[in-house]
Length: 474
Image (cartoon, rainbow, N blue to C red; front, top):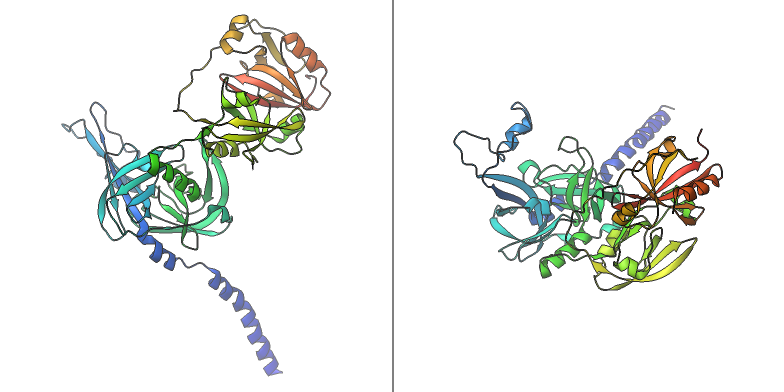
């Protein structure tokens, strides 16, 4: 009996110990990865000269703040009698992609730099020159005069799985060859003003100085370039974003060949297709890119694409979300012909567009709208007025009515005074708005609980707004 109790206790001890042992075996070991791949990672320091007439920047920290000691090395303090010209320094990371000295980093790391110094893992230092930069993807290709250099191995970001381990090597706050690890938090992230990059989101600790450094998978392959952090303090908060390496390598190939990047465009303004918009247009699911407006004389107009179309496919590639379209079009060679599948008035249509080229960025002026006399609110709680001939000419619209005031509940919150209602879409049927009287007659026919979609003009942009459950104002 005593032997049986001992045997039972021994078996129980093995059972309790097994999960911990198995867990220890499953913990990743990054040592081999770092030893083999770390030699191809570089520290990048840049110097910018700020010329005459400008005051020196002030540190955003008190002198007792730990960050003060770090930043004061790179932002000189104003001293009496010092010249107005002064140098500022910044830090970043990069990695070698070819043995003859080409490195990838972020465009913002080398922006406006008068001198770029690359320090390798073996302590050798080289001055670098910029081959080309692309601000839209934040990629820069730089070159040092060297040969026989160690290079990184490239991986396939499409094979990354959410939850798998990844490793970053870089120089956060100037601490060279720092290694941090975490997991892939999400893929294909879209960030504001970043239409051409499907970011890899991770929880890897990324801080100032990590920018431009590589993100490795557990095979020791580079899958991304660490580019941005989401932070309220400027430090790591668990939200880091990397540019997929396939995007970066495509950019660097163009930079190496021509020193610049060309992208396709078709001349449309788009927005996301929400569930309410999908219902209004008769789509089975919320997918595609909804065309708000079409550039006059642009490739899309010549191809027959119209405002109100939902682009479902471009060049044979499905457009699952509106953010997919700029990436697909941008990667299409200017001058080539591409098939476009659109959803229009309850059915699909196939069109062919000749892709244009994205021009240099331009700042568009805002259109000023004139005031109009006040009128009574309609059934939807909207105070509307007619557009004068001068307003129509100025805004280049054939019809539409001006929203003077919104007197309705929260379902109308997206509609604002100053908007111009150009069309009404109900159950997939588009009605162009030509007058206040016509709009009010349409509104009177809305059934209780019907979702009504309005095509509006706001400033220089067009967009679709859904009024949920349009009903009499109470």
